[in-house]
Length: 391
Ligand SMILES: Nc1nc2c(ncn2[C@@H]2O[C@H](COP(=O)(O)OP(=O)(O)OP(=O)(O)O)[C@@H](O)[C@H]2O)c(=O)[nH]1
Ligand SMILES: [Mg+2]
Image (cartoon, rainbow, N blue to C red; front, side):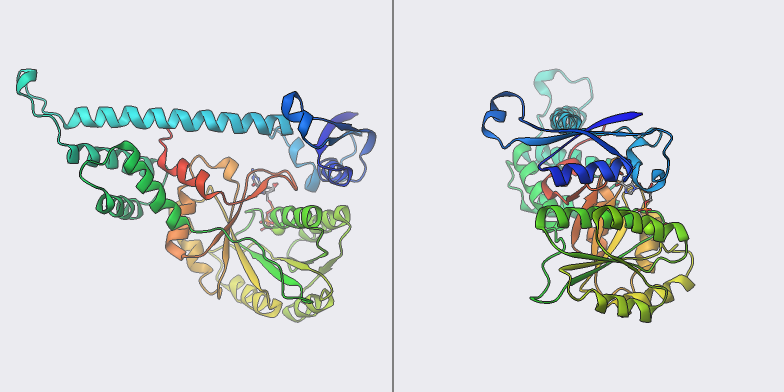
């Protein structure tokens, strides 16, 4: 028997977390209200703590819901999340220190290296100093996997904006302005027209996390925005794919339709016309297999979707990424979701793809846990990560 503790804003959310993690077979052992520790807890609303258990030998839902029990994937508790946030702050500070160290060493390298007495050495001018600082940031962008020509354009734009006596803070401020400007404002699934559901279709390469992300979005919209949701899957290549979505739908207690053809998809969307939000899952397409894209094209068009989401794994190489974007260039318009950010060591891909496509960023996903591991793209956080050194 495995026992786990879950903390959530209310009982409904806590039970959902239990089911997402342990499956419908989980036993609820105890529920109670808890307050956060310390002074903050005195003024905050109580949270609900649920103690749940599952027979370790019950593997009925293992493939789809027990993601956090997979070997090597530790369960993340709210306390651990807070700890992670603190660690991120420390990492940011460390980055700043590394930047300053790099800047100082770069300034030293620019100083004359012959054996002239110190008195006779020429101090770098202020302009040289600020170009040294810009150079440090340029190298950081490259280290963070921003493509070279994009990094070059960014620092050129920054250099043009700098005054002659610009210091570290001025350069950092200008750079963060240019990068966050390039990243743009994130756009998530908006409300549909009155009396009509918002229809969103999820497309992308195989295994990037389309179905999991769709489930995370469905659960979050249901819990926080109390929206009525319909799920449709057009992924009929694998029986397991339909089962995967059905499992999530069952837990969330929302209907799911299966569409084998474009005509059936169109019909299924009509059937869901009383919903606030309709989310459509599709089969992963390999960008190497051109034939599959014809079918996807017909599904996208039959869905009449208001919004198309292209999902890319944050671990994709620059080269594959260009090929993938090429394969999906038939899409009329789309927004970008970056999955598996937790597995990526840099976030350069987000800036590269945004720059290359001009499409809006929407969500990033940060782990396997449904519904927790998803967030709206945080432009500030990504900008800081891109500017910082990862050494
Ligand atoms: N580490 C990590 N794993 C994730 C994330 N999102 C999804 N996964 C895992 O990636 C694997 C594939 O997820 P799916 O949702 O089935 O991917 P898919 O794109 O629907 O796959 P196909 O339908 O086969 O194309 C699963 O093991 C997920 O748990 C994430 O943000 N981080
Ligand atoms: Mg899938």
